[in-house]
Amino acid sequence: MNKNYLKIKIFTIVSLFLMMGIIPSISGDQNENNIDNSLLELDTNNEEFFNIKSFISSLFSFKNTEDYSVFEDTQSSDSFENPELFPMMRVDYETFKEMKEAEENTDYAFLDSSLSEEISAASSYSTLDLLDYVPSERNQGWCGNCWAWPSTSVLSMALNVQEGIFDRLSVQYINSCGYKRFIDCCDGGTLESFASFYRYIGYTIPWSNDNAHWQDRYGGCKTDCESIATTPNYPISSIYSRKIPIHRVSEEEAIENIKNILHQDRGVYFSFFLPNSAELQNFNNFWSQYPESSVYPLDSYCGDEINEHEVAGHAVLCVGYNDETGTDNDYWIMLNSWGSSTRRPNGLFRINMHMNYNCNLTYNGNKWGYAFGAKTLNVTFGSEPENPDAPSINGPESAKARSLQYYEFSTTDHQGDDVYFTIDWGDGEEQGWIGPFKSKEKVELSHSWDKNGDFTIRAKSRDKNWKESDWSTLQVSMTKSKISNSIFFSFLENHPALHPLLEQFF
Image (cartoon, rainbow, N blue to C red; front, top):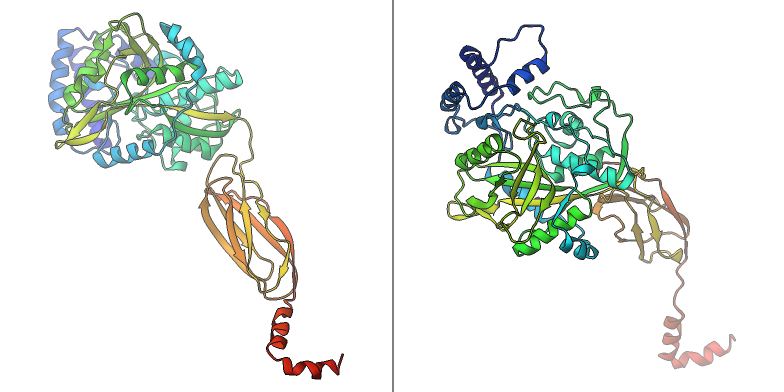
């Protein structure tokens, strides 16, 4: 959304609330927490509240909002229960297509078949106790970064399970420093872009670091990356997004696959898209007016035609399920990033488990794409070398000059990034950077030396971030090429008259 538009909207809303007496006037010495507390005390059942809400909606209806950025949250959230003011992502067709193509190219998550009996015997499961979070502070507010909250939570849970470190990780860090990997502050993103950022940075930091706590809930983006303390930190040696198979499989298989990830004590990043403002309003009403024990029928709009100006998306964290005998009371438990309220003290909501996971939305009568997605992270913690290894060089160590020789080059990048090679053949000839190649892939190159003598082949590798290895070397020796004896003897065989003459010399 245009930021000036947002400012006008905020000013109008607060001014009208003050005029109607719904919130008290706030003196200059009251801080941000006082404002938050006043907002939390709003009675959304108040008749005046709904009158003013309707008036604001008429001023700022979706149809009047045509100036918004791709992937930017065009609504706002502030913990108080106004269903008009909860954030969702706006996604145009091209951006959605890019997201789905990236997802299609993502590898599948590991499914542990040894958990089948445990899953079959379980009627419920929760991973929420693996996550350190404060419901009221888990509030993206005006900031359009819903995707960063479940992504960071999946990473936090992995840190706890793998390293035994129960610590809340910073969301502010990627919001302020994401520009280093082409992610704008308070802009949209995916689990893939999250993993790409942390592969590049190589560590994550606690929420408790100086300036690392969440500060951009009002969308100001005033926290400089350089102001955030990066010590202490938790080194990451490898991190990749992995999709959970829920498409092109049966409902039973989709449910089993999500459960499998949860029973591995891994976080599940769950995304969904709503086709129009009516469905968005339905979900917002559910969040604001119903308790955490209510279940939302998320697939009720499957097959609906999207409105390209109103389609919206959101990402949350799946932390568990209930699956009793029968299907009437089966649901997934989702952790949101919209703060807490009296109706939702833990920031949780539930969606139906038995739904159409192959749910498609349509656009102009054609398939737009899947409405739901489920992913997780493959992450390894620890300090691995940031640079790729010095390349191995395999090939002949001695040969004839002026004969073409073949050599194999290979290297390992510990983050799994693609690699490039440069070769110095030792005779004044050099091969500039070539690539990209996969880590550990064997690359064959050929070369010939015009002169005899000893030469040193040198090779170096780098990754896509220009982190270079040391040089590796291989000594080779080239000898003179001799005229073949077979040519001489063939000549004698074809000229027998020369034999008597040659016998006089031998």
